[in-house]
Structures are given as C-alpha cells and as structure tokens.
Image (cartoon, rainbow, N blue to C red; front, side):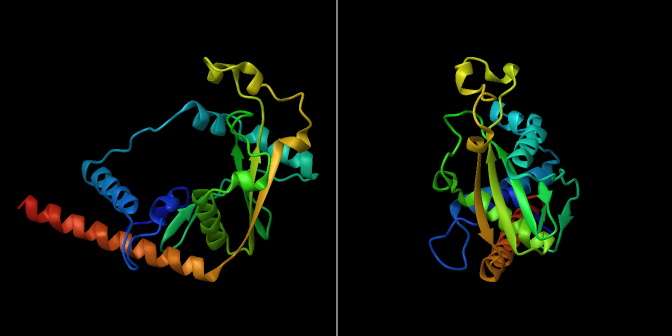
Length: 207
C-alpha cells in the first residue's frame, strides 16, 4: 500500500484540471514510485544545497534556539499513519517545527512572505496530522556554508556569522486544517488507485 512521505506531499497535492483527478506532476510522481518498486532501486539525489541542509541542520537548530531563547532538540522519531509518513525536525509538545537551512544570503527569505512555499506547507500539514498537534512553524535559518560546498560561488554570500542572528531566522506559522487533511487523504487514495492501474497494466504486459 502506497504511503507518501511528508517531504514529497507537495508533488501530489498540486491542483488538477478536474476535481477527483491527479495533476500531471502527481502522475509523474506515482509512475516513478512504481518503477522504483518494480525494479528495486532508489536513486541518491543530492546537490550542494541539499548537502548543506543535512550537514548544517544542528547549526541551524542552535541558531533557532539562540534567537528564540529555547532549547529544542532534534527529533529522531519517524511516524506514519494509513496515508503518510514523516520525521519532523522538532516537536515541542504542541507544535512541529521544520528547519530549512538556506543555501546563501541570496536565497534566504528575509521576509516571511518571501518564504511561502506550497511544498513546505504541505509537508508541515503532514507533520501536524502525524503528531496530532494544532500548529506548525516553518523556520528558515541562515548559517555559514561549509567551505567545501561553496565551490565557485562568492564566499561572501555564504559566510554569515558576522550578521546579527535575529536577522538570520525567518518564521512562517500554520494552523491545523481538517479540510486540508481530508484533501491529503483523498489525494493519497487517488495516487493508490493510479498505482494499482499501473500495476495492472504491467501485469497484463508481462503475461
């Protein structure tokens, strides 16, 4: 049974042309998942920005704690229900916090409105659903990029320790929404139906 990762939820939640259908992007996502399952592979997708997100996660959590006078620790629990699975960065007891380490000063959203991202929002809605909590925070954190990742870019847009920490954390806030959670359930079911359709097509082809 297909379970969607919270981080991938945005790929299936894009509006379709007709109600009760999947968008072209969602169908592409399901087709890729089907091929991976049949052929038994998982490609290792990486980029300098993604590697920074992994490498600097703790630095960003510490920056967040410094700015907001907290002492939150990295969550290591992965939760799943009948539709989705995920591992939030921080769970405070009534709020999930997702930390995004910005690649450089040129990509860091100084204003909350600059950080609006539907994919990230769906990811946080999945976390609220999984952790059964009423609110979520998307936190963009700007910490210095490790030198080996910078490569050909101007180092001055990556070295940020001299900038006031308060200026290097931008937060967006979300409240739990039952209608959007129902939309998640319905969209996952559509993905499962399409996945089964692909499985039937493949079975017929290989008889």
